[in-house]
Length: 318
Ligand SMILES: O=c1nc2n(C[C@H](O)[C@H](O)[C@H](O)CO)c3cc(O)ccc3cc-2c(=O)[nH]1
Ligand SMILES: C[C@H]1O[C@@H](n2cnc3c(N)ncnc32)[C@H](O)[C@@H]1O
Ligand code: SF4
Figure (cartoon, helix red, strand yellow):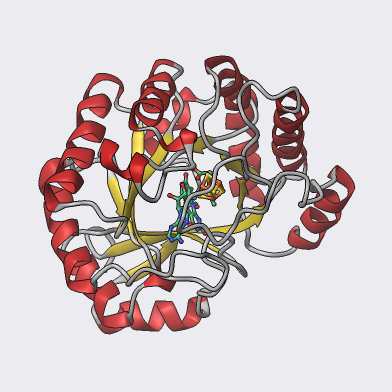
């Protein structure tokens, strides 16, 4: 059954350095106003990591609200991102950070303590800067695409994706995918593309209609045509029905992303049990298999220290 019937997921736990964010994306269920969210201390993180040590978790997803690039608070905010990733590594986990746009130097520093980094392109249509991203300077398309280029230059295995249902057209979606494909062509660093449907949550003001499930299946088909075959397509299983998930797999999606106790981005939609997912996939002949937050093709890009850590990690979990 192995081979072309395998679907992967990453056993993950999410650490949130801060929910405070200077952007206000209309659809966000995560952010708090700056100063309202006490930062996660290294002591708290250390305790949490200790409690995760006997579990199958390998990935620590570090997902953060953002401080303005020119704010005097930026260096302390960045230092915490760095320290949390270093701590997670030290405790035997593999960090993946998605904290919004970084400077080139910040990205270079995080490469030393993360096995991959991530940033959603979301959509490259500039029209959204006048609607859902009116108060979100970090979501300027050119800023996002520049992040992808810098990650390529730095040889950082990278996760990106589209956020769907923001008011974009089919042409916008295809152009966003094409922009990712063009950048990947130059550096070969995009390991996976997430197709993330907008679903309404209880913490946002926007409350738009959810992205249509049939359109998600169509988009998987289109993405498979636009992106090279080596890039995995990821569908978050907690945001779609069982039937839609199976249809997306049938259309070419091959990964379910990080699965853990809480989806911090969509806290109203918890992941079912792994057993339930495994059974569902099995009913269509798919085998659900854990993976690391770095895809195998990119291991040689990591520092010798990170490679050693991955070796130790796989030995301890055999
Ligand atoms: O549990 C989640 N994991 C999210 N992840 C983690 C993802 O599912 C994987 O665990 C990592 O990409 C590692 O392969 C993201 C990673 C990114 O780089 C960018 C966006 C996301 C979004 C989510 C998300 O909404 N929920
Ligand atoms: C971590 C990533 O999650 C996405 N994101 C933020 N809010 C939502 C939502 N309500 N639904 C789906 N995805 C969302 C953004 O694209 C962000 O970059
Ligand atoms: S989606 Fe990210 S950038 Fe936008 S408000 Fe939420 S935390 Fe901030």
